[in-house]
Image 1 (cartoon, rainbow, N blue to C red):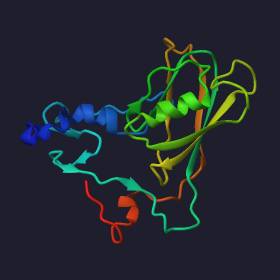
Image 2 (tube, one colour; image 1 turned 45 degrees about the vertical axis):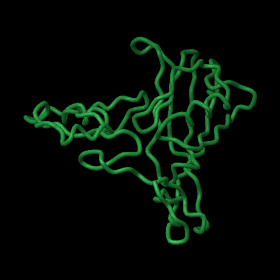
Image 3 (spheres, rainbow, N blue to C red; image 1 turned 120 degrees about the horizontal axis):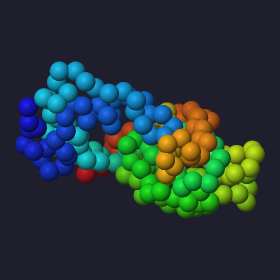
Length: 199
């Protein structure tokens, strides 16, 4: 089966197997989904994998800007912690988008700028627990990178982190949720009743 209207120029016509490979399961810390979709329709059924900001079965609909409702109080942003020990280059991933490889000695500012260039992230803060250190260390304790999400909001999936090591000779990496996000991620930041929001 082919895709309707060629996804309207805003997506890619993709097999069920490929969609499952990128959207069908939980990532490990290296950015891989171990699940493989091999049912009878894996290479027979195709559907649209829409570009960022587009959705719908044929990618004909465009998303409105999203954000946290400024009128809602007593909320907390999502904070994720990443530990890294090693000297290999690293890349950060979030919702199927990845930064280029960055040196293990990247600064918090460099990581922030790289993350905010991803189509899946608008605004984050990046802090190092070991002040004055770089993103990965070769000594104990390992560096901890704290990523605070301001947009997107809400309870978010874990980031992924990969390195350029062949086989298993890379950095020692850990990723966990430090603080569960309770902010909102609403169309037009939930204020379209008061302000006009158009795309």
